[in-house]
Structure formats: structure tokens, C-alpha cells
Image (cartoon, rainbow, N blue to C red):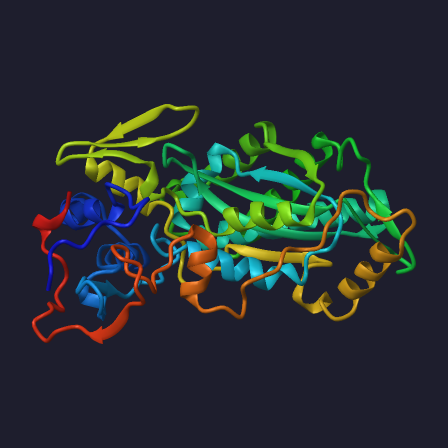
Length: 400
């Protein structure tokens, strides 16, 4: 096998997988990881290595041989999201309504983060329910209409701190209660921010009180004090809750591309890594700034954002809920397309790549044709990996 295989353009110099392979054992000596976190780290470390198998791309013209290894397909892996993102966009294109969409961000206050870390499934589910009910109820009470809402959970800041919040794409209007009209929102604002904050707070506190009464938080150490929960509720009732809405997107294709980036974004991408050594990891944060952390601290923060198994971080409500696809969503689309005048600057969703194979989708996404030799451009031929190819995980020494 030739060793002169050229690197493909745009390949990151550093990878999160390198840090995991070199420093994971030290992390586990210092931090107790749950099953989901350990599984995610293993997937990231093995992604696109001989341990997962693969094939050999051979160029019949120039003789170039290049091993291609399988992906782990873990949703927390920074190397496995581009294809999933394109497939998701293709699937959602048919459901998105041809109207403006507001971008709303609803955030858990800092005092709730320790509880969310201990009981992520319970707290995140409560956040989804409270946020969706807040938006849908305001749609009914103020517009007398049903909105369409798609929500995505994020748990990180650019510095990888734990910061749970929900990004919501909300239709700039809804179907009237008699199902006869499309009722638009104001062009200047969705709903008053103060009202959204108060409603979200009330619904979240009510959900937390019910779960506490059912004993679901009994294992939380801070609640060993019988009065601790009531003190927390009192402080949460007084502290600020952050809810804000950005100006709506005008074009459907912009909504799709924007939402696709949010749905499949991971805590940190390989492209953000600036430098990786045995002592420090430096990565980009915001506005050209960087943060430097010890590798074990970097991995500790990374594992904070591993979601529970089978937890759905993208959810749809109102007109976008799955049970509305055949009836209410179709009726809303009819109302929008038949309205006079038509919605301004709204274009149909772009042609999707749902029926294309992964290689063609990658070519459309990045311009890179993996079926062609990167050296001479000839059509590559797939062959099995030689028997000498290792099936073991990469050794620690291969980390950057």
C-alpha cells in the first residue's frame, strides 16, 4: 500500500478523537462517567478507524491506495453530522410551511443547572413541555390560532460550559380556530418577552413541584435538607428567566439551512480546535477569541453535553407535530398558498437530496467527489481491506 496518499482539502489538523484517545483514562480516574458518556467517548475515538472496518479505494490509473473506514454515527461525534444534517433537511423540506419563521431562544436559569445535570431527562423534558406550551398557548390566547413550532435542545456555550436552552423556530402566524383563515403575527414582534418569560417560569416551576412531590428528585444530594427544594423554588421565582425572539426569516430555504445547522450541531467541531498538546487544548470561542483548557478539563466539559440514550433533542409541536401532518398542516399550506397577496419573498424549499447516496450528497455539500482519485481524477475501485489491516482501536501514541 502506498504511503503517499494526499490529504483531502479542508481536513482539520486536530481532532477531538485524538484528545479522547490520549486523555480518556485520566478523565475516568478523576470523573465518574455514566454509560452514555463512556459510550460516546468510545464512538468518537473509534470513528473512521480500522476498528470499525471499511474498504480500500484503489486508483487503476496511478495506483493510489487509500483505506476508507466506517463512521461511528454517534450523534455526539463531530465527524458524523454533515450527512445526517443533509438527510434531515431533505426530510423536513416537505413539511415546512411557506411563511416567515421567528427564532425564539428559551433558557434555563443558572440555579437549575445542577439539577439538570443530575436528572437531564426529567428536566429537559419539562423544558420542552413548558416552552412549547408557552408558545402554543400565547398563539391561542393572542392570535386565536395554532402555530407551528420546531424545537432543538442545546446544552453548551462556546466555552463548553453547561447552559441548557431551547432554540425554537415558530411560524409567523397560525391557522385560525375555525380552520378558515391564516392569522399572521405582527411583523415587529412575536409576543411580549415579559409575558413569555413569566409563562415559561410558571410552567417550569409547576412541573418541578409535581416531580418533587412524586419523589423523582430524592437522589439529589442538595435536597437532603427538607427546606432546600422550597428555597430553590423561591429563588427561581425571583431570578430572571431569559426568553427572546429574533426577527423572522423571510425565505423558507433560509429557515431550512439555519435549522439544519442547529439540529445537528455538536458541542464542538474539529474545525474549532486551534492547537492540541499533552498539556493544553486551545479552541475558538466567539468574535475571534480562544479558550485554552487542560485536556482532561476539556473532555470533562465535553461529556457534560452527552444526552441520555433515545432522548429526542429535536421535537415538533402544533402544526408541525406528526399527528397534524396529514390534516392541519395540509390545510395551513392551502391557506398560505391561496392567500392574497401571497407571502412576500417566500420561495419553495430547494431541491433535496433524499434519494441520493451518501457519496453524491457529500459532493453536493462539500464539492469533494470521493468516488474519484484525489491525485489523477480517475474513477476509484473499491476492494476489501487486506487481512493485515488492524481491527484494534488506534494506539494512544497516534493522538496528536
